[in-house]
Amino acid sequence: MRTFLILTVDGLTNGFIYALVALALVMIWRATRVINYAQGAMAMFTTYIALFLITHGVTYWLAFVITLGAGFALGSVTERVLVRPVEGRPALNMVILSLGLLIFLEALAPMLFGGQVKSFPAPFSRIDLTVGSTVLYVSPFDIFIVGAVLAVMLLLTLFFQRTTIGLSMRAAALRPEIARLLGVRVGNMLTIGWGLAAMLGALAGLLISPAIFLYPNNMDEVLVFGFIGAILGGLESPSGAVIGAVVVGLALSYVGGYIGSDLETIGGLVILIAVLMVRPQGLFARGQQRRA
Amino acid sequence: MLEISDLTVAYGGVLALDHVSLTVPEASITAVLGANGAGKTTLVRTISGLVKPRSGHVLLDDRRLTGRAPESITRMGVAHVPEGHGIISELSVDENLRLGGLWRRDRADHRVAVEEAYELFPPLASRRAVAASSLSGGERQMLSIARALASRPTVLLLDEPSLGLAGMVLAQIMARLRALTAERKLAVLLIEQNARSALSVADEAVVLSMGTVVVRDRASRLAGDESLRHAYLGF
Image 1 (tube, one colour):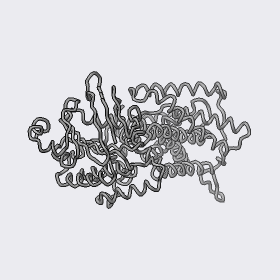
Image 2 (cartoon, each protein chain N blue to C red; image 1 turned 180 degrees about the vertical axis):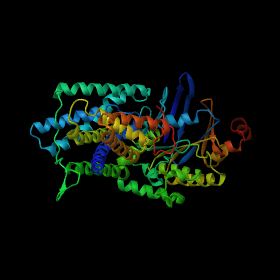
Image 3 (cartoon, one colour; image 1 turned 60 degrees about the horizontal axis):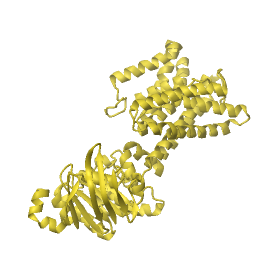
Image 4 (cartoon, rainbow over the protein chains, first blue to last red; image 1 turned 30 degrees about the horizontal axis):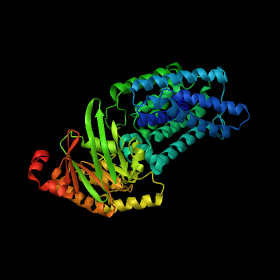
């Protein structure tokens, strides 16, 4: 029972972080019909920015806010400068481009910040809470992770459902040509979408790096797990992506804890292959076909 | 007033429009008739900026539209109701309608314009919150026109509004359109394959054939001229 609780809390908190990455991937997929393989590397890079700020005397929370802003900037500049020129070209162009950006960022980070593994601070204690002599298996930082991710999802939902820009972005993603005929500046909506996606990634980097440490490819696995979560959710549905990512987090935690931690990554890939074979449209999609 | 001069459009090497000139005065409906592939849809898509012409230009009250992006042309007052109505079925009726003129800075007047659009088409007002996918064909067409009107356009481009509509519903929508054109001083370009319905509401009519204007006349006269009707319109 004790092991099960520990693994469940672990799986849930990791799953919530994967959910941020999954959401970022889904947002970009829906708007641009591409998978941004550099999503994790962008998050790694902004986490380095956070660490740089913190080690230079900036408080954690100010660095936190600046990093989210840096994420938005990195995402929107990427869309403007790199993605826009390949728009309307074969999908493979964008795949190569995002892989190129991944390699570039993972090479640039050690040049700027050093390549060794670094520890990254958590804003709250990572020691499990206790009531009297009973251990709760939940640390204040775990609570913060879940709370922060839920808050971000609530804000995103409100943004998309209740604001003018949110409605314009949905129209632009669903029917770009119709949106343009309605006066929506679709190009700007894409820029904002990429910015928001990278901001979600930046938050994921800040939340997971205390546990996995910071090094130039520390987000590779997180990207893969977020991607599997997004596929599980059908790639089209934000809520599906969140549920899918939490399922992946839990499943991997149980695999790692009960079978062996070496098998975690393989466990993720097994889930991916199983889903693609049995239900390629995802667990929640209403049976629509998807290309490449 | 919308002025189209010498518009030539080609897809690859094939001419879709060949030196088409046309004016659409305000407070009037100009019908563009012709068979499939005559260039009707290309004409409206070029006006709204989705297709770039090889030569010629489009002016709106002496301001040049040609060369601008579709979203900018819309913001200059040209509302395009595309073929097959262009309703975004994943969004609600209200979200679809609000998208018409969502860009306008005058938020208060945008809300007024949306409410006015609901008043014009009462069947929509009772179904604001439902997904647009649950609307009937006629309701979708109403929503599409209402959405265009919510942006307070000066030019309205309608591409085959009769498509898939029953005669009664179509007649109602056309009557509504007739009244609105006078009331709001709209310059309406009505693309139709259904010549009979279009000629019954239009002031002027042109017939396109193979990308060129072959007939240009008062709609009433065209409807009355049996030989022209037989030659170009098939009724």
